[in-house]
Length: 243
Ligand SMILES: Nc1ncnc2c1ncn2[C@@H]1O[C@H](COP(=O)(O)OP(=O)(O)O)[C@@H](O)[C@H]1O
Ligand SMILES: [Mg+2]
Image (tube, rainbow, N blue to C red; front, top):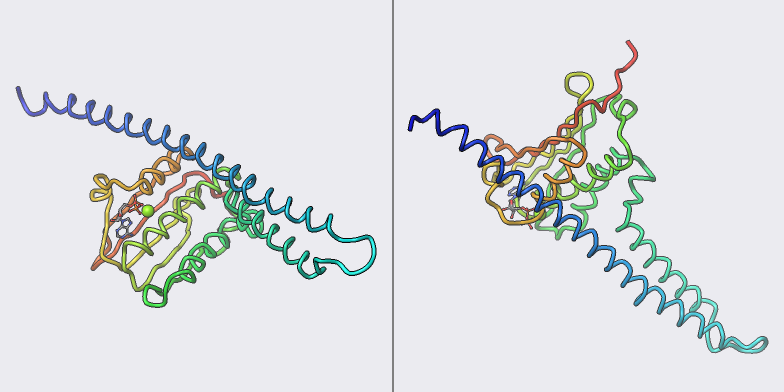
């Protein structure tokens, strides 16, 4: 059989494999969401509710008059601790930084927050660059913003855990007027989509699947002389600026 006669069969079989992988990733994301809900419900039940019950018991022991076994400052500390727990649980459910400051500052914060939690010897320099006026022109639904935030969180986490980079740059700019490009560039040991296709971690698969959900394209390209550029391209999300 000639070479060009084999090609359509090869393409359709690799398409079938890609479709199967996509379906598997979707199922796994749904399972992870379910596992996450269970964890949050467990946290609320075992931790937060239990703490509130202890607080109730402590309050019940306060006599209507006279000295109390629990000091007001102790009660205050307990309430503070429970509030912090609830805040963490809410943060897991929906990143408050996104709602509070908007997507671009949230992305900048994700990068600086990641570096701030690294031990001194693994910290790297970083910069965040946003094209002038892009923030006001971006038109993204809350779901798209959350998916983009989660995608960049994972890409940043990968750069910090695997790249051994000295410098990381996160940038956002427009392309072809209506499309936007977010790039995360590191000068680490290097990585690209080809290598990525045979890696077994869930991070890359989740990034691809999240991108698929919002109709964005993602890629990892080796950077010269070393490092990696992760790109997220989202078409038609930049409103045209008034001429
Ligand atoms: N920026 C990067 N630089 C170097 N290697 C990377 C980078 N991003 C991802 N990788 C590689 O891709 C692999 C898979 O990543 P991922 O699917 O997120 O799984 P995990 O982070 O759990 O290892 C990583 O183990 C690492 O080898
Ligand atoms: Mg990862």
